[in-house]
Structure formats: structure tokens, C-alpha cells
Amino acid sequence: MFEAHAPSAVDSLSVGQLLRQLRQQARLSQLELALQAGMSQRHLSCVETGRAQPSPELLHSVLSTLDTPLQTRNRVFLAAGYAPRYAALALNDPGLEPVRMALMHLLKANNPAPAIVIDSHWQVRAANHATSALFQLLGLPLQALEQGFNLLTTLLAPGGFGDCLINVEEIRQVAWQRAARETAVDPGLATLLASLPWPGEAAAAPDLAAPLLLTRVRGPQGELRFLSTFTTFGMPQDITVASLRIEHLIPADEPTWQALTQACKRLGEADPS
Image (cartoon, rainbow, N blue to C red; front, side, top):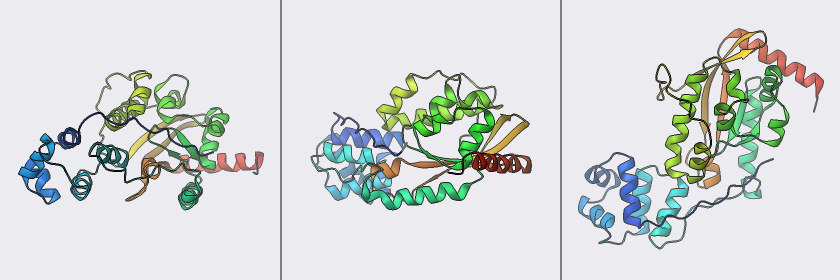
């Protein structure tokens, strides 16, 4: 079942302070940002210091240049005294029916490779048949998929999927560091991350820039190897849609493909629905 997000609190910072904070997070100087956004450095400086009121068009240009998340863009517009520009429809809203259909199609097309839909808080919103088959293969509770679970929690906390991983230190490091970066614009995620155990320093630092991550799983018949990657929606205009991503666990070798294909078949025979 798809569920809605709770709205985030509005920042108390001024619009100029917010823009300066976002620019500094992007590691850009005023001159670099001004050139990329098509404005003068002097005008940008005046906006950041509160000596000039930015127009909606200027805000749109700067925020687009910085590739700012839509929810943060709304906070900037509010701080400037303008109405928010981006909606945050519940995923079960009729207006997002095409999005739900696209997600279900992508999940189904990935079988027998596991795939899940997660939101900005790493909450699993939907999963395909192959994910259920993998859970059954590893002895993980299938009701977790039916009731919904948090991917970050199951990776970092004891008793979850993380316990099934051979390269658990690397995966936990990658998950922690990715989530830590995302907390800069998501107070709710920051609260969740603070409640989870820190994985500690890994023996070898993971390559966060790598397009694919090898996930090694301890299966009942031996090691299962997956390449982990994400799919997101391009240029979304809704906060809920922008927060969604599909994580794919693509079997990295023939034995893993065979194991998942057989697991899917067994699950289908046991539960044709």
C-alpha cells in the first residue's frame, strides 16, 4: 500500500541565508553561481545579504542551477514571501495514477531480479515478486514486505537484511554515507539516522562515485552476487515523485540468476496470487 509523506518544517532562515547555505553546500563561489544562473555577482551578493528582494524568476534560475530538491525549493519560496511552487500529492492520489502504473510496470519487468521502491526516508513503498522470493530464500519474514519496512533500518540494525550480507561493512558504510548526505535537506531522515547504530570505519573506504555496487549475500546454497543501482524519475514536478527511487539488485552471475529464477518459480507455485 502506498502512503503519504508528512510535511517538513519550514526553515526560519531568511531567503538570502538559505541561498547562501545552498550555494556553500554546492561548493560554488558567488561568481561561479552567478555566471551559471545568468545574473551578476553583485546582484546575487545583495540577495544573499538581504539588500535586494529576489524575484520568483531569479529564485527559479538559482535553485535550478543548484539542482535543489523540490521540497527545499518550496521553503526558499516561502522564505521570500512567495507561495510554494511544487505540490506533494500522496502516492495514492488519483493524480499520480500514471506514476503508480509506471512503478508497477518497472517492478514487474525486473523479475526475476529483485527491485523495490523507496522514498526519501528509505521506507520501502512497493516491491516486486523477486524481492519476496529473495526474502523467502534467505529466511526473512515475508510479512515485512506486506507491512512495509525501512531499508536503512534493515541494513544497519541487527536482525535485518544486513545480517545476510558477506560484504556487510562496505554496504553499511555506503548506506550510512548516502543517508548522511541526504539529511542536509531532510530533518526526518536525520532523526532516523541518529537512532540507528553507526557502522564504524570500514577497512577500505567504499567508492561512493561508482555507478554500481556489488552486494554479496550469504544464500542457503552459497554466495549470491548482485549489482545494486538506482532509477529515479527525470525532472519531476511533484515532491512525492521526486523523492521516489527504485533500487535494483541485478544478479551478477549465472548461479545467482538461476537461484532467483527458481526461487520465483517456487514462490509462484506456493502462492499463485
